[in-house]
Image (cartoon, rainbow, N blue to C red; front, top):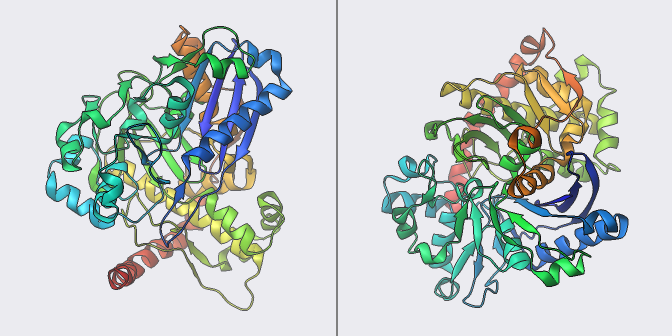
Length: 494
């Protein structure tokens, strides 16, 4: 039996998988994001730990014998979060998360200090990455920065609590801007640009390698009385890829989670920073991947559901299904930049917008506009990937948004790309983490990293490109018109 633990932004999910790869149980515990100032996004590392214990306790109550048989644990989690520890491994402040936009100026400072940033890391310096966050802390909280002994990513803080070891994997480390992504090693130049050194960094392993063992007292509290291997694990998207079998060059998926992601596997380092495409290590050896990332996807649906007073996301989507084509064409255009944007704009000042409201706009139209706007944002991401020569064939679809057949079909029509929903695909990163735990215990990648059964397939409508062309062009034009307005407002605030 193998346990996958995924530290998401809104939930810690724990998942049991048996030797055959079948799901054997799952549990979760919710998390909240703190936003003490506009564009800030923080969480307490202690809240991560408590939620992890609660999720595993849920498994222990429901499946005590299965949990007791666990031989390997894999970890996945939200990327880029800056978890700052003192010399006694105590958090110095709340972790600054991946969708925090405070460090735009610090990105410029980092590139000024290290002009080769994009060449070394394969990525543009963006506020979401970890490195500029440390420059911000050094500038605005110097009393905290001087006490920083270790910087860990979110899932690696859980590893420290579970094993006592400070370790990260290549896929998660690639999102810090401190990794030489092609060489799969820390870059002294990038660390020095943040006034840090290797001494501040965890040891690196591949995601499918062992990183340590579960502490005996933790194992015993879970009812486990034998040694348990903890795998290197992966960043959430790389782990999701392992979970749906996207492990060979050309494989890919689209994720409708808190963020929106298009992910394509490569057999070599293939950067395209000019279009704000991410080039990271995969969670498996000798493989890399390209990603387009939008910062707000299913989180936009959660936001509008609260805004319109809907019972839940499924309920408001059921209402959207009653809209006819003419009503959809009259819906507002929604720009989904509630947390700024990465691909293709790299614009932390971008804001969410409804354009085209009238007295006739009802809540169905607002919700439709949101899922369409997120789909248009992903179309921009697919265009950015294509500009560097990356082509997508059939893509798997994962994340909470994959549960909506309505949204999956809309996305297939907008992207003009076939999409497959896999049984258990909503498990995503937690399933991939469990598989990495299996590999770290000697499992064979060919039998462990298979594709789950296809639950449904969404083929693009023949007239999809024509139906959405005008609205997609309006969506893109609105960003172009509003971008200088946002930038001017951000400059005025600063």
